[in-house]
Image 1 (cartoon, rainbow, N blue to C red):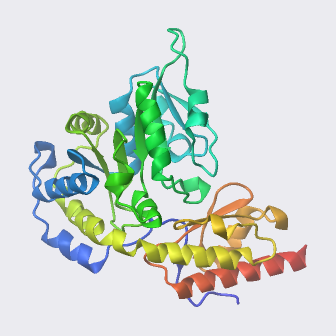
Image 2: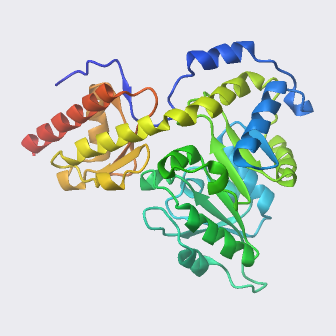
Image 3: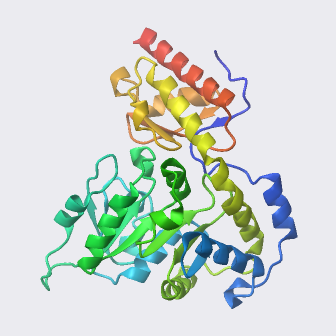
Length: 354
């Protein structure tokens, strides 16, 4: 195969998408004001619309999902408390230990099945109510679960966790960075899926296709508290309506086409699974993330990704033997075919060289 006929096939993340022409038009025409004074009409509309879609009292725009999660953790906890999260979760592994260094809380990590926590697993991690032990204040769920390959929480399980947690006086935060992917997979509305969670963060800048930003949704009291925390973290913005305009387009149009990303991910997974040296169960691919192992081939992730790069294809290592590929709106079926062919060629050459 050699050099790819495509200029670039970027499978690193669904964050790499560029704003659509309709987004750029909306951004150019956006009515703006100073959001620190609560006077940006475009941003106010985005927040109102996000709250409406999730059936909540209010919403808050934040620059990133990492800030959104941190804002919620800080709104729900106080220093010295614990937050239960899944051991491979994004909040624990990929957010610069903000819960410790900024929020002052301790993560209590629990192993989930394919990234999905059960109430039994969570219950085993809840601290006894003894004054000299750190107290469990919050449970953080991730839906879809990034590093488990985009796996989805069944809504009844989320509700069971929320029910039991609330009975124990513990709050539940949903890191829903890709919650619309989960909704597409389940065929449900995000408002129903998250109705019992005490806060939700979701990203506009992943599969929905906006260039920047995430949302926090919840009660009016939570959002007012979160607004103060966002300001403290340096997230107070001025004429942010330029970004909000793209977010509104993403929110209205993005969810309608996520099924295509899922179809392409399933197709990618099936193609990769048929290649000798690749270990992958395509039946576990639920949304737009495909994670596969090279362990059986003896090839290292860094070397594999380097070979992909020579063919104008980008992916990310999960660890020394696993690789992640993510489908998104800028990848069509032909690009996926090209990626499968490149992987096949790399593995064939590696086998012959070994």
